[in-house]
Image (tube, rainbow, N blue to C red):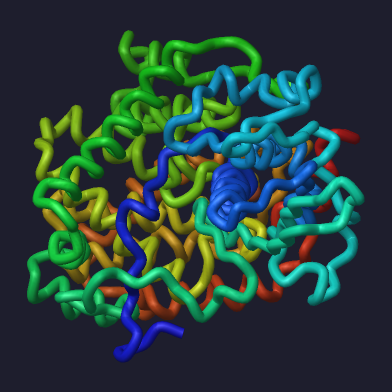
Length: 460
Ligand code: SF4
């Protein structure tokens, strides 16, 4: 558990990862884990006859809808999430079914889509399922015995952890210059540094290997936000997966552009069109940024992009907004979870709403206490939100839920700025309650598609 002796050292650019949709924990994380497994084996000179991946828990229950099988195949092929060509990614399972062999150093190794095994998702014993998103990777010899077997956990937001490595947390090169380990200590540092985002930027600048590296990384993240919005606004038609969900971003955007929406709704409608665009791209397997996850990828970037356009914000303000949003996600990640499979949608859409609310509040001139309050309000009013994606696809309720997250983030920022005396709930308290609520939540409501909308809508 993080403390004064062990402050938060999550890296900002580890939070905002570029990768294919539709899910950070079910697509990006498993792809990264498979890629690391490949590198370990190659580094150790292991040449297997064939490879096998076993998906367990939520990865098995909703893996097909989330493209987890394709993601692990891509990772084993050596594709990096940030660079994968979405078109090649979309047909990778068919490509491997036709030619089940991949390059492995100087060798060819068998890999067929059937080598991805979906374990019984009802087996939840601790030994079998140390985390709701567990995958086991095996390099097998010709007799089917494992030359190497590694068990990986996809813990949310694209973060992964190999079992047995819990003590080996990736450390930055030096202790943080502005250490914080909770919302309260983040706030204390923010008062000294002039903002929540300024705290994170001070730490990151002290850690960067070359001057300008951080700024270049933040530019890449922002450009990926905008590119995703542009693509999402261009595309129309039905999303893949057979659910019949039709893209709505371009229609809502046109309504705003032609003045057909109520003037009082204009700002939020514009940001919601951007959120639709991002989440529709995510659902279609396009490249998005975990903010903090793929499922909740639309809320913060859409809120930021709308504010940038309307208020003509420059590069520095954009970087600061990303850092402010990131600081909130870091505290949530350190004390609870950003994963729908662990704590339900409150951990994804709730966290994203808190991040967007904090960043918007700061953009609009809020002081550090108001920014913390905006984050708290954004999260508090998502407590208890369950994860129940229909057919395991990140479409319904996810896309619309991001648009609603934008409206909540806007309201949270405005309430924090304009309602005077502070409330009685701090960010730290609401994060603790979110974790407790997530633990109490039945597994049906944690990315298994066995509860809520996922089981009630198809039959209606
Ligand atoms: S319901 Fe929420 S947590 Fe679940 S997949 Fe959709 S966005 Fe993610």
